[in-house]
Image (cartoon, rainbow, N blue to C red):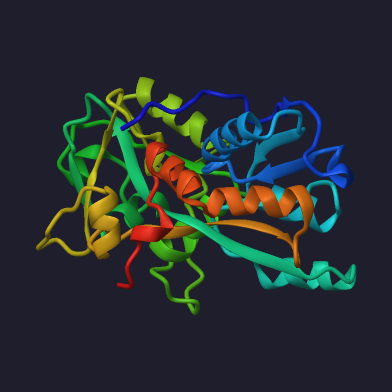
Length: 289
């Protein structure tokens, strides 16, 4: 996989110049999901190269952070790895704001362990048990006699919410299962990747674009009988990989000017090629399950 750009999510990255549309001379702000912040950064760099002189700022912090900023009018585009929630839509409606959703690609959520961990595959039930604290030693799932250090994104992360709803709660809205109290909450996907790469006890989940040869990505099976599936474009397209999701940009309804131009670029063939190059699945090849 293509190596990800390393950035500090708490720092805005500014690309400055003059806008192709006068009303957008001040530029735009994009905030939200750490999962796709590197993808969006590459979009911004290419968009600015094609339109010299515009100003776009990017900040990570999680999908919830992006929605809050969009609703409070402190950003123009919210990046998200989950759908907007009813409570967020209600907050927007109270401010007389209509929100528009754009699916910009797809992702597989992968389970990372240290490169020296002998475990290479887990079932969905085993993953669930690890993150709920029912399995606490790697020996219980075929590994070494080591305590498991479990890493999760913080609760404002769309990745956190997706994992809880689709792995811990198995897609059942009637379940209320939660992460173990012993789970360590990490501020970004990059932080999970960094900890797993140096800690032989650790396990965490990230978007598949954060995998590399410095960590091990586990194969995942829906049941113990298998098959155990590696996350890649083909297995996500076919629906064989069990933990996949759409990725989103959100704006205020009927975006205009620079915001619309940027969304159009993200959805264009050039923008979707960047989706591929940053290890996500583009829209044009996604097929119904």
